[in-house]
Structures are given as structure tokens and as C-alpha cells.
Length: 113
Length: 111
Image (cartoon, rainbow over all chains, first blue to last red; front, side, top):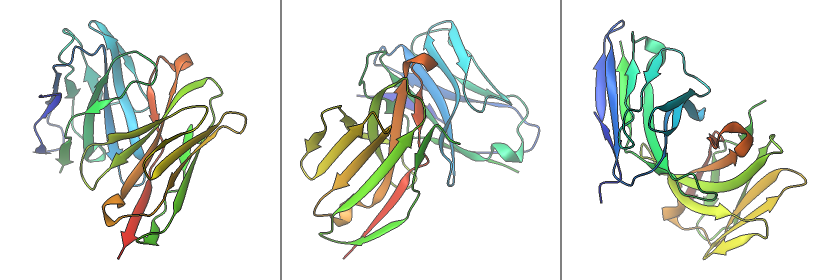
């Protein structure tokens, strides 16, 4: 039972570097989302997708891009890393139904120096 | 004002205590409500959904008050293993079905 798989688990970047955080789910869920979690801030939505080929911005989208070419994969791209993007990133997936559980990946701890 | 607000705590309680968390939400179109649990540095996991009539799962009771736009979580007979952060989550279908999280309430149960 893989569920939601995020890679890498840890990453250190230099300011200005770019990278892609990978997220894959094997539950055939239509909805997928990316969140960042900072101390005292809870989880804030970066981008989300309600199906392949459809993405939309969340609360804090600046500096991040996403694409959804397949149902299974929802990568998050950092275009030019900044220290303010130091955070823990979680990917989540769920079905569209009411009262449905969201499943999370184990998180990516990103430090930008 | 955040769309979903919680008292961040921390709540420090002795084993066996009863503790209650509240959460308020501002979007009257909110339709689905949940409590998630997050252990230190790990991913959130569903604790329980919250239904209009209230619902119970063992030592945990969740309540929803739509008129006042708040939900609550009651934990009875606290265990050391209940120590975690509890996240209030709301889905509003006039916002494309996005999950909106409160900032979380930290609970520490002491021997």
C-alpha cells in the first residue's frame, strides 16, 4: 500500500537554484494538493488540482509551479529558490466526494541557504 | 482574519484529564469538517470527520455548530499517546473543494 509518495524527504538548496518535488499517488484520486507548513502557521495551500490537466492556485502560489499531466503525479517546481521557501512541504490526495479523507505524503523538509 | 482559526495552545494536561479544543470558521458555505492529528514532524492523519449531529469515536467526541460556525473536539481520559497537534480542517464547496486548515492546537499530556 504505497498511498502518497513524496521525494525527496530532505533537500538543501542554494538561493537561486531550482528543483522539483515529486508526488505520486496510486489510489486513482482526482484531487491532489501541495501545502507548506511553517511554525505556528498550520498548512497553507500552494497549488491544487482537481484532475489531470487542471491546476489552480492556492493561498501562497508565488515562486512555485505545478503541472498535472497524469492522474498519478503532481510535481511541484521551485523556480528560483529563496530562503523564505525554507519549509516542510506536504502533498495530499483525495477523491472529490464529501467527507472523504485526504491522504498525505511523508513530507519534504527543504532548507534554502 | 484566517478562514479557519484555532487556539494554538499548547495545552498541557495530566493523564486522565478531559480537554476540549475549539475551532471557528468564517465561510458560511463550508460543508465538510474534520479533525486531523499530526505527530511531531510527521504527516497529518485523519482523526475523525465531524457530522452535524455530533459524533463519537471512543474517547473522542466531535461537535458542529453551524449557526455559530464552530466545531469542537473533546478528548476524555487523556493518554500520553494523545500528545500531538490537532488540526481543524474545513472544505467549502464554493472554493473548489479545497481543504482549509487551522493553524493547529498542540496538546501535551503529562504523566
